[in-house]
Image (cartoon, rainbow, N blue to C red; front, top):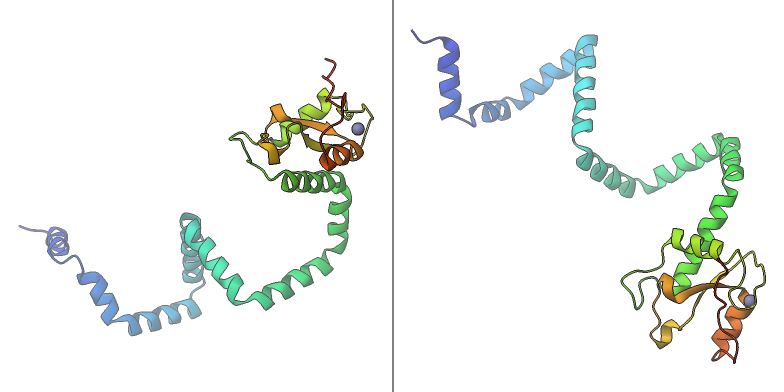
Length: 199
Ligand SMILES: [Zn+2]
């Protein structure tokens, strides 16, 4: 004899949409019943919340998209939230800024340098940040032209980018702002060549 379970499974196989359609037809009463359960049962609320958390964890992409859309739609609301948070956490923020001021300055300088030399010009190997730091260390924090120890060394392209020089480590040396400026104003004068770093 066939068990009910087997019969049900066979029915399910031949009517794949039946359950979904049934739920669609009875959506109103299902929702009403669930609302009632939500109102009266603590266990049901917990169950639904857990389901929700699980779903969010397994649908990162959808969650991110929805949050982005929501931020777009409620821009003012989020701005206000952010403002309130900043005011409430003013001391934390100041402390964070104080601790990270060096890092922030360095980051800013790097961004400006790269913007100036427009990354990836004439090369498939644009200068990387750690390469630049290694170069500076190699030149012992000195200008490659005049040897002055400068705090704010700039990235000087030995062959200028405008003349086809590459924006990569083999065409870049650290230069003090004054030498870099002099070189940019015209062709480098005689004897005005980058010194080889003393290793
Ligand atoms: Zn110099």
